[in-house]
Length: 120
Image 1 (cartoon, rainbow, N blue to C red):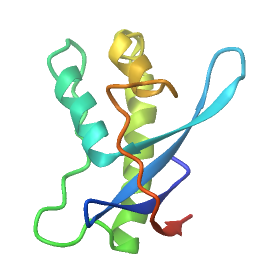
Image 2: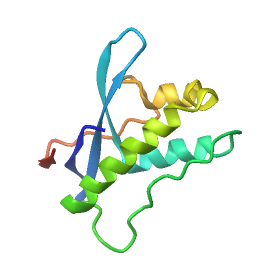
Image 3: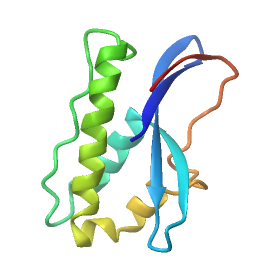
Image 4: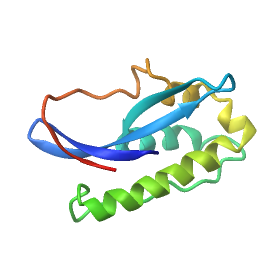
C-alpha cells in the first residue's frame, strides 16, 4: 500500500488506497481499493482453512478521512496484504487474484471527478 487519496462520491468523502502489485515476472501495476473492498475480501477469506488474519478495524464514530487515521491504516493494510500473501493456500485463491487485478469488476468502485486531496 503506497498511500491513499480522498474521493467524493454522492456527497460522501472516502479514502482510496493505492496498492502496488508485482507478479512473478516482475511486472508491476497499481490498483486502487476502498476499505470496503478489503472488508469484502476478508469476509470471503475468513471461511478458508489457515486464514486467521484480522483486518484493521472499521472506523465507526469519527471520520475515516482524517490524515493521521488514513496514514496509520495504510501501514496496517500493507501488513495485512503482506501477511495474506505469505499464506500459500490463501495467496493462490482466485478471489485474491481478482482483488489485486486491474480489471476487477467485483472490487472496482465508481469514479468521481472530484479528488479532494492526496495523502502520501
